Image (cartoon, rainbow, N blue to C red; front, side, top):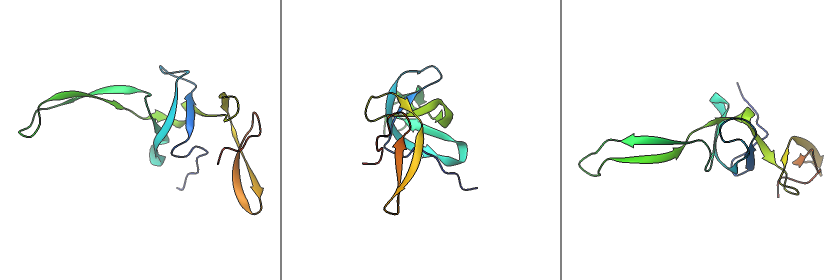
Length: 106
């Protein structure tokens, strides 16, 4: 099944639900098969790494994935959450903000 998301890698998003509600960051990666995104600085979890001969043990803080329905694209004009609409200009598909009509793809 080929899924099409309106959010792409590198987009600025804001969390609209969950423990990190109101925080924003950039999309690091998209997990299409699970409908999830990894956002920079959001949903931080601790990973306990066992010591090996090469490196000592440590506790790493890494970003865990968050469901794509819990994030919304940030409007480039007023930094508020927005939905996305598509428009064809000169045969090229462009992403636009529903709130302000601003072009998302620069």
